[in-house]
Length: 287
Image (cartoon, rainbow, N blue to C red; front, side, top):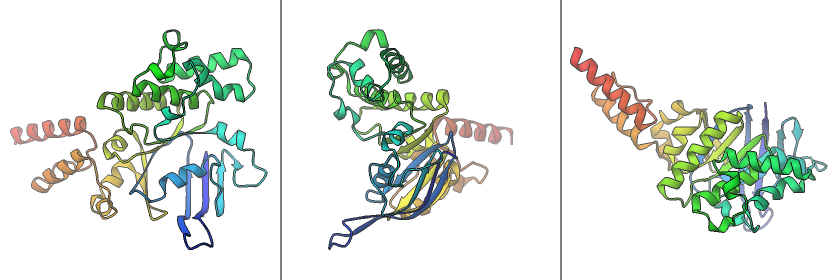
């Protein structure tokens, strides 16, 4: 087990008229190599939860154990924690600040006190992982790049720290369709290659459906649904009651199933829907 959360509570502005309980007694376990989608309506507590995972916020009460270390203890080493849990915020390109791509990605590893040879190796590997050509781009300014490329540089800067857990908060926000597809493709490849534990926060049910193998649904500071992706999206009425939805293609296939019960209603992607409809037409033809 890579992460265990026990009875986690967090209150903003405690003992004031503005007191707000953002996390309400959350307990969950995450295994090494899981790809988790974290979804919920705005204000459900998603961002507050992920900011606890590398010590940016300290809980009001409860425990978080990462890779066997209780990160909520006073003597916990935050530098070590932030090596283990890489957090990529929304619009991470706004955090780029160095004059070259190399220097930006190297910033974290240098702060770890690594020698120049190891720093270079990490920068090169991180750039390859996000699909950026090291020789072509290392000396260019990150501010000359497209929005999608800037975001890849920002993600590479986190990957260069070699985290065991990668948390991505709305990684495709604000990108055009091409940039969005490229980033999602790189995240999928990263997961396939590195067997890294990934937590993806997203409002896009389509993105969640394509990528993750487990979904956590948050509502008013609680995890109210926790299950495998297909199982969670079968609970369309519950999700809609929480102000969420299911992928458009899943909804379409559910409607088709109402007309013919032989059609599967656990379809998550357009590719799966195409196969299912072709199979359905073959069955009709042979009948």
